[in-house]
Structure formats: structure tokens, C-alpha cells
Amino acid sequence: LQLLDNDADGAADDPAVVGIMSSSVRPYVVFVTLTEDEGFWPDYDGPSAVVAVVDAYPYSCDVPRWRGASPVDRATWPAARAVGGLPCAHERDATPEALLSLIATAAAQLCPDVWGASFASTAGAAILASNGDCGWGYLGNWMDPSNSTCSGQYADSDETCDEACVVIEGIYWAIAAYTGGLYTNERALFTRDEWLMCTPDAAFPIEPVGVRNAISLQAGSAALYALVSDR
Image (cartoon, rainbow, N blue to C red):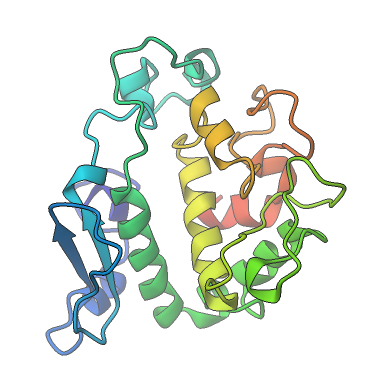
């Protein structure tokens, strides 16, 4: 519920999204496996994701409160972005991406003009703009935005991730960035060859430090920032 309840009132902000995801006809499903088995995929044609238990890390450093920052006071985030030596889990928790990607897919179905999984939607156009000229893996022209001469902040190298995929993935990255989930020195370095808008707000120091094209989400894509922050 936390990922659907931005105002923290105990109820999902958009019941229509919940209705789509919980449909008895074609529900959105997360399949959980014990280990990471690349060969596993369920015989299910509805929207789904697979997450391995070994890739789930409670108390992740990606969550502001577990690295010593306030979950509600964004001004505390810059001072808590160096996480080396902290007792939080330093591994990347894969569950938020799986869940947020499904939520984004439901939003795309409900509001295709805004959240549709194509470059023609509002979100898709913003994501395409964030690519600059760094290209995409599925088009065979990908360049690493962190160490090449291209001008973008988001470029997925996965050759199997097509237009719809990179839009949904980009929405996930934007949400993760806005909520502080990428704003640590460790996570920003981890994502640098794909996503360089790990810093949420323009007033914050940039992570990763000293990396070409790195910029805040607010300054790098005001359109995405407005969409995921609802401001």
C-alpha cells in the first residue's frame, strides 16, 4: 500500500489503479521464487513480475530512514547520502522496481495519454528527451551516458528492452529518484551507465560526484519531476 499511498492516509490515492491491478479477470501478479533463476517465467499472459527472495533486502540503504534521514523531511537527505559503514543493507532491493513497474503499467492502461508506454505519451516524451543522443540498446546505438560524448541522462543498454519497456523503466527510475531511493553515493554509482538523475531536487548536491551528465531530476527533466511528484 505504501507505494500507492503518497499522502499516507492509509488508502490508495487512485482506487482505479488498484482496481485494474486486482481485477479478477486479469490480475497483476508478482511471482516470488526462492532463488534467482533466469530460466523461470510463469505460464501467465497477464501483467506480471518475478522477484527472487534472495534479491529482497529489508532495511535497505536506498530507503532514507534506514540511512539516518527523515522519510518526510527532504532537507535531511543530502547529509545522509554517504552510506559506507552504515548498518543498513547495501545490496540493491529488487522488489520496489518490480512493484513500481507494475503500478506504472496499470497507470499506462488507465491514463495512456499521460503514462502510456510509448514516446507519444507525456511521460514517454519526457523520457525520450532525457535520452538526448545516447541511444538505446534495442536500437543498437546505445552509448554510456556517464563516460561518452552523448548528452543524455537515461539510456538503457538492454537489447531486449523496447520502446514500451524503456518508458516503464524510465518511470520507475524517476519515481525512485524523487523518493530518495537512488540518492546515495553507492546507488548513484551503480546506476550511472543507465540513469544519471539520481539526485531528486535541484538544490541538492549531485550524485554521483564528478560524473559527466549527472544532474538532478528536477533540473534534468522538469516534466518527469512534475509527473512523479504531482507538483
